[in-house]
Amino acid sequence: MLKPLGDRVIVTVAKQEEETVGGIVLASNAKEKPQTGTVVAVGAGKTTDDGKQIPVSVKEGQTVMFDKFAGSQVKYEGEDYLVLHDKDLMAIVD
Image 1 (tube, helix red, strand yellow):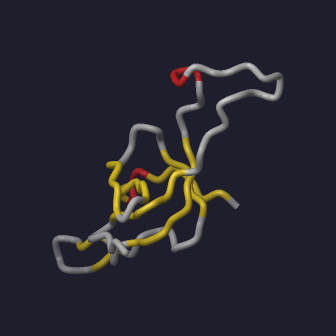
Image 2 (cartoon, helix red, strand yellow):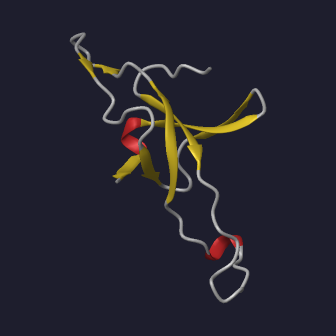
C-alpha cells in the first residue's frame, strides 16, 4: 500500500453519476466541481520550521470533500488514487 509523506492524504475518488433522475446525460463540464472520496492513507503531518509536527486533520476511512482540480492522480496496483495535501481538503462528510 502507498504511505503518503508529510501532510499528504491518499483518497479513492467516489464515482459521479452520469445521468440525472430524468435520464438526461450531463456534460462533464456541467457537473459539480467539488468531489468526495474515502481516505485510505494519511501522512504523519506537516513539520514546522521549529521541528514540531502538526498532525493531518483526517483519519483513514473518513469521507472527505475536495475541489475537482486539487491533488495529483496516481495509479498503483491497478487502482486509481488521488494524492492531496491536507490544506486541499474542504470538508469531512458525515
